[in-house]
Image (cartoon, rainbow, N blue to C red; front, side, top):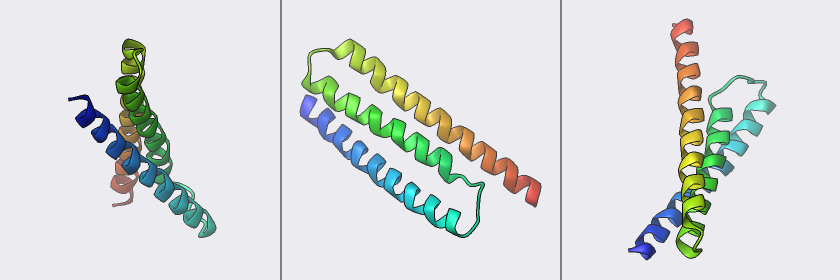
Length: 99
């Protein structure tokens, strides 16, 4: 069972890492074109928290300090999801005002 959980956490961390790299490249390209406000800053920050949560999940299954790492795992994902939700809501408000 724990190998399945570790595999899932590794997959989530790879996706979060890809999202982090993609967000950095997108923000760099947008800054070069003069676009300042975007959804990509919250995506970048939330991907950092998702990556940290996945790393904590992997460590949780490999180390015996499970309670503290499990708490960090879930809190990190909760913060990441909250930041992502805020970014999507802000972007929604900008689109609604533009229409």
